[in-house]
Length: 439
Image 1 (cartoon, rainbow, N blue to C red):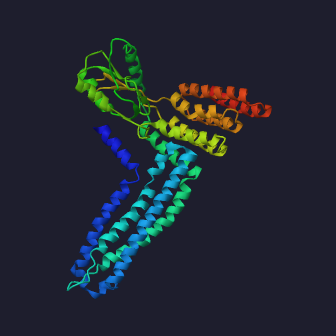
Image 2 (image 1 turned 30 degrees about the horizontal axis):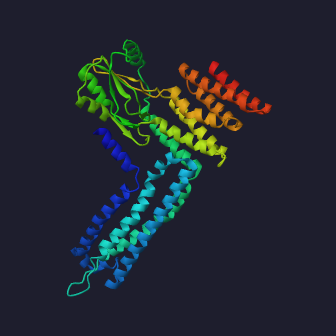
Image 3 (image 1 turned 90 degrees about the vertical axis):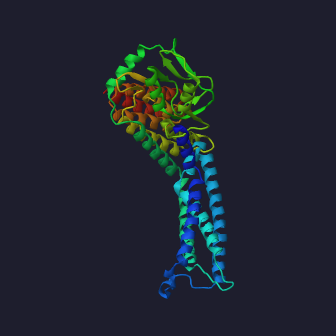
């Protein structure tokens, strides 16, 4: 249930309809309130009425009908511009960046403002009466409608500027970078007690998850979006077992493969299997909320498209590499979460599949190195970023991962770069990296 709610909220948050729908609903309430204000005794004072609309009923109808017609037209134009921007995003930066633009709050607010003003004007328009003994012209509501139009067109002017700047490569890359930094601060604690990790490794070696264990398998395929660790932890504690999770958020789960292994083995009823499967929420695509590698893959996708023959924009690719380097520096200040979770009595209960430093480096640099094979600027920048990463960490295990990637880049350059002077530049960067690692 928890994972379903989280996924539903994420889908609504990144949609184009949620904020416009809320603003449309609020416009109805606001219109009714303004009409009630017009009906109140305060408007009997002539001094107050002079600040608002002073024309007749025909003029009021003309104003409101013009506002309603123009607002729905502008809303259609705004939606068309948004679709063009989304198309440009997909073609230049890749489909994974589409989610970032759909989640843009300002675009949603602009579209909602035009729709809300349109609905507000229609509701006020229907209350105008000039036949018979009763004459009613909602002067305050009409004046507010005019003010809303002025505000809406102010939003429209800024919207043109916002759309033009939001599809600029540097701004796209910077927005992904901030998203990744937010994920780093959320997923990686500042300090982790090393003793529980060592104790968990010792206890795991005494368990055999290959034979003599129970497994619960997935009944469907999809990307793992959310994992309810609390449900699995509670289940392990109640049954006095150790649960090993085989997938982490971002992995593609195949139907029929084990979701968890349980030691010691035991039989589970159908209700327990359903609880376990409900802890794994699968979807058709990846999301960044619980998947830190998602934002890294967004950088990689932008870099690969920039290096493609059709675009041939190495500067954008280098910008992506620079942001990946800045993200690595931020990660080097953090301790990666331990896969081992214990209960309040200190007993091992849960072994998670968590991301590690080697996996982060593989996700960040493997494809760029492979696709940029022979590109001198790209490979030199990759070695420089690895040097910066080596300068900001003192973890020997991370040194080994950095050195492994540096050696792969160096070997690739030796095979793919024919020019001697270019290879000399690569040699200098690689020697600088090695001296940092060895020093």
